[in-house]
Image (cartoon, rainbow over all chains, first blue to last red; front, side, top):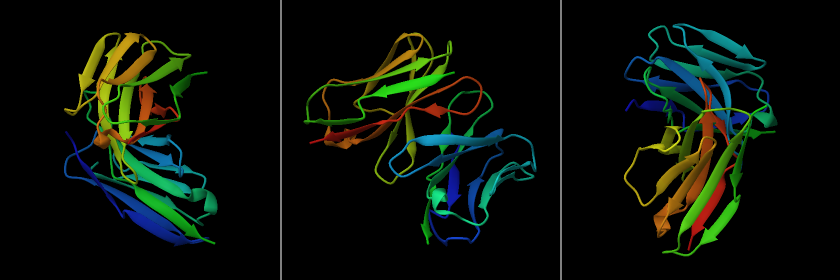
Length: 111
Length: 110
C-alpha cells in the first residue's frame, strides 16, 4: 500500500512560536487527511485536502497540499499549550476505503 | 448525530486468555468500520476493515479476528492473547471521508 513519511517525529516548541510538520509520499495522492491526538486520547479528524496546491485554514492552523499532490504540510502559528498532541497525516488511494497513517509528529510546548 | 461507542476503556488480560472488544455506531447506516492498533508512542496500524455486514478484510496476519454481525456493530476477538497484543485499540467509522474514532481500549496482556 501507499506509504507516507512524516517529519519531524518530535517538535518541541516555545509557546508563541510557529512550527510546521510535513508529510511526504513517493507517489501521487488522491487526497490527504490530518488528525490530532491529544495525550491519552483518540485521533480527531481535522481536515481533508483534495486539490493540487490547496490551502485551508482553521484558526491558527494552515494546511497545504503540494502542487504535485505528493506532500502536505501543517503550519501552526503562535503555538499554545492546547496545541500539545500528536498530529498525523493519513492517505488513501482513490479506490478503497482504507487510510494509511503517518508515524505522527508529537508536539510539546514550553510555557 | 452520529456517535461511536467502544468498550471497555481499559483491560488487563493474562497471556492465553480470550479477548472480545466491541464497537457500536449510532446515527448512521451502512458505515465503513475499522479496527486500528496503536503501540505506545507509535502510529496507527490498520488491523481490519468492513464495508458491510459479514464483510471483513484483514490487513495483517495476526492473532486477532474481527466480525460484523450487525450493520453498526464491529467486534475484535482473539482466542488466545499474546504479550505482543498489548496496545491501544481504536475502532473507527466513516461514510465518505474523515474517520470518527471511538475513545479506544487500552489492552495490557500480562
